[in-house]
Image (cartoon, rainbow, N blue to C red; front, side, top):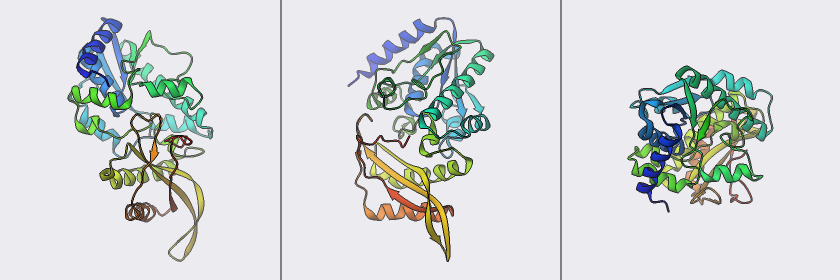
Amino acid sequence: MVDSESFIDEKVAEIEAAIGDSNAVIALSGGVDSSTAAALAYEAIGDQLTPVYVDTGLMRKGETEEIEETFSYMESLRVVDARERFLDALSGITDPEEKRHAIGEGFIREFETVAREVDAQFLVQGTIYPDRIESEGTIKSHHNVGGLPEVVDFEGIVEPMRDLYKDEVREVARALDLEEVVSERMPFPGPGLAVRVLGEVTEEKLEVAREANHVVEEELEEHEPWQALAAVLGKATGVKGDNRVHGWVVAVRSVESRDGMTARAQKVDWATLQRIQSRITGENDTVSRVVYDVTHKPPATIEYE
C-alpha cells in the first residue's frame, strides 16, 4: 500500500517542478481520482490552478450542483455547460470505442478553451494505473488515456496518480482530509452514462439511465459495493396497467473488488432486488423490465461499454 504522507510530499514537489511559474487547468469530475489530483495540484500551485468541471449531460443525478458546493473553496472553479455539444458529438455513434474517443476529444477541446482564457500551458488529470493498463492493452480506451485525440494543445499533461490503484487513491484522499462524500465515493466512469447506454446515446435513454442509477446507488448503499450501476440495454415487451408496452430493459450490476482490475458480482438479497425493480419500473413508465447481472470480471467488464 502507498505511504500517503510521503506520496503527498513527493507529488506536490513533482507538480511544482513540472508546472513552475506557469498556469494549469485540471479536469475535475467530482470522483475520487480527479478530486484527489485537484487537491494535490491546489496544494502545489494554488491560484495558478483552474479546476474545470464540464457538464456533459452524461453525469449522475445532481452531480453539477454537488460539484459546485464541494469545491466552492476553489475560487477559480469553472463549470462549463457543454451538454448540447456532447450530445451532438455522440449523435449516430453506436460503437463503444468511438463513443469514448468522441467524449475524450470533447473534454480536451473544452479544457483547451478554458486554458486559452486563463493562459494555462498544462493539463492535470486524475488518471490512475488501471486506466493506463486497460487503455494500453486491448480491453477498452479510457477517455483520458487512449481516448485522447492525437493533437493536444498543451505543453504537458501532468498525472500525479498514474501509478496508483483506486484503493490507494482513497488513502491519499483521506490523508488530504477530503470530505467523505469524495474520498469514499463510488467509482463512476469518465465517459459517464454514455457507457451505461448501449447503442446510440439519446436524451431519453440518458434520463432513464440517470434515474435508474440514482435508485441503484440509494438502495445498495448499505450493501457497501465497490461499484453499483444501472445500464439501459434495449427494449422488450412488458405490461403497464392493462396495456402492452415495448419498454426499456435496465440491467442492475453490483460488484465487490479491491482495485477494479477484477471483480465479483455481489450477492444481493431478493427483497432488495425486488425493491430496486419496483422503484425503477414504477418511477419510469418507459421501463418494462429490470434484470440483475451475476457475471464476474472476467469474463465481463464492470461497465457495459
